[in-house]
Length: 268
Image (cartoon, rainbow, N blue to C red; front, side, top):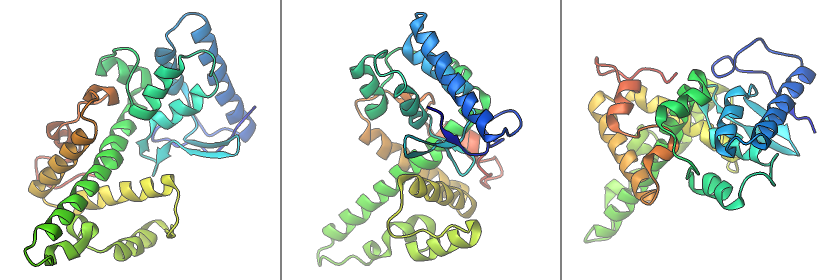
């Protein structure tokens, strides 16, 4: 069954935009090749990464579900695409290995970071880094700051610490949530409702990440990055860093997002 695929994005995908039917066919061809590779004896995970490398649609509607693989044209959620593709071969990959990948991110085979990057391709891998730092680590930073505020509020001898009242958004981004939502609407034209989808929330988080890089000086960026990475490590204590296909570290973050001048550069 073909999918309804939106226009391709040049940040991650190659080639000229195609007509809707041609895009459907291209997606179906990737899926057919994926099945053939597994049937021919390729390990399902390696065949999956190759299929992701060939995939051209940044988003689609399939089986009544909306899939947004590319956040803000820059941040690529490869595990969401993996879920979509693995649904096409339910009988060809061990259920326990698939669940371990999708729910805990654990890879069934060992691949080094260079091979992982090569199978995805340079553009998708770059966008994968944006998603890792701009969405996953950013969300971990938000959670870590919320926990700090909670502890501050409960450790006050009078039960009322004014620092806790500023809220996570104020502390990290310098404005409360309503002002940030208004700024987001002004810049993107997207109005965030109280009840939003995961994709909409991740798009907002990625926007916040870029605003933080623009607003903060180098020392504050480094401090908040350490905080986000530490929180993510605590959340994923039993899982290897390399499962994400990127060495999660402050140094790697700085190389990509913080130039030597101290001013943060735009995520690419």
